[in-house]
Image (tube, rainbow, N blue to C red; front, side, top):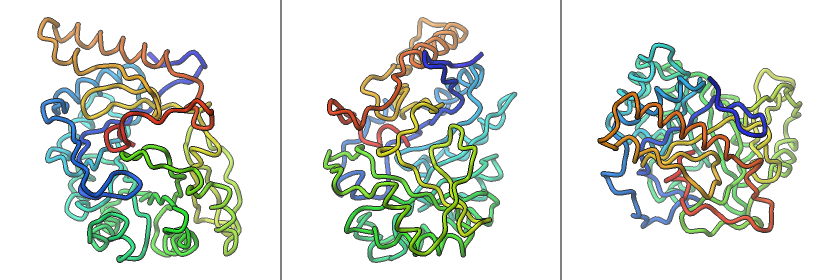
Length: 332
């Protein structure tokens, strides 16, 4: 089986948000007093998550990325990883995190079968980190990165969003520090997915500018064979170190997208910027269905959502409308 849309894109990657809660308040994501969380009874249980994942794997999904919110605040996150890896044909399992709880969880997650982590970190300055996140937790993030490296969750990818006048002076220091410490750095253009709806294109540091900033100190050589990966990779000073740049806004890679997304409250999205969702939670909780009927219906919902996928996200179209949900509720 395969989940193929009308443009010939075969979908092999499912991003699964396990919670919309987060223990940081990054300024480009949500206000410091944000409290518009999903109702607790809307969140999928571990059994419900596993039902969807099992069906998705049967339909051709080979990679699961666990996201949030912050997935490590979910108490059963290690068990989720363990159960995914116990499937007859387990998919690759990765996780995106802010690393606040990673120092204590990196080894248990690795032991449960987690392959690697993506860690969000936008500055190397502890005071700036506190201003950006409204939390004095920089040292915890660094401890989490080190724990991930020690646990063998390689490559440890560190994702950085540069913002004009905020941290755009850290492009070169961040890359230098990453190379020295064995991080795989990726810069991501800021996307219109903040809870407060304050995204401004003029404040965004675009991929071409990031490239130029890095080339003031390093020589970047494109790595061929990008495939469906969101990041364009470059060898740094002829390698072996690389750096990635994700140009979601200025150079969309929609034509190669192979990703679907499941929100923590059981809604399927065929694009990060989709305006429509497919309700899977209702099927999961329909008492009139047998297990077999439930799985068949979920498979059908996965197929129909994939077929309805548009050719691109349309950020650069004048008619573009920011999704109603912020990134914390969609899952990265």
